[in-house]
Amino acid sequence: MQKEPLITLRKVCAGYGGKEVLRDIDLTVYVRDFLGIIGPNGGGKTTLVKTILGLKKPTSGTLTCYHEGKPVPAIRMGYLPQYNKIDKDFPISVYEVVLSGLKKKAWKRYSAAQHAAVATMLKEMGLENLARRPIGTLSGGQLQRALLGRAMVSQPDVVILDEPNTYIDKRFEAQLYQLLENINRKSAIILVSHDLGSVLQNVRAIACVNETLDYHPDTELPEGWLEEKFNCPIDLIGHGNYPHRILKCHKQS
Image (tube, rainbow, N blue to C red):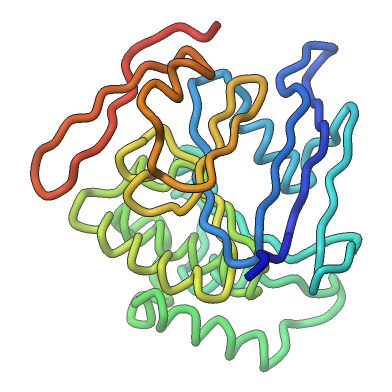
């Protein structure tokens, strides 16, 4: 069965102040895909995410979105940012955080249907009893669920998660990936992470970004693939129930 494209990037280049960060990027994200984006710091992961979100305009190349196989101007996207980009001191409740994921016209109130969608999402995230709590009182795992609810409440075609493991404990990590498994039944997921072990355990395809991009259609990486393509040597180790790869300290070439 042929997979249906959701987003395509063809020969995309992007950068800042005349410096090229991404070069000749070719990538297809499919409907209900689960793609892991990995690569060294400074290799262009964040720039790629900004380009996909429409926050960064390519200097050349094309980005095309699709709906039911036909090109469209845009699709619905949800975004879960890194923890360090969230101000926990801002006076806003869990309910309001999730509600902010829905768009409305400036002069209108949120509709009854939108409030119902928020209530449903809070229940799915297990936060219905914390709806009126200020976000500053939440644990890391609770806050992440609230932000994930905000990213998902609009029922996006794709949700992008930027380093989702950076501020949760291992106890919640398994719960997070169970939530993502449920979400993936309806939406494509793009997971950006330096945690190669978590990526390999949960995604179905991998894109390694280090100025250019190399795509692998599954998680069975050939030995030496990352080192050969991007000077990113990895070791396969095992402890607990899961073997996983650890990215060694290395310099970007």
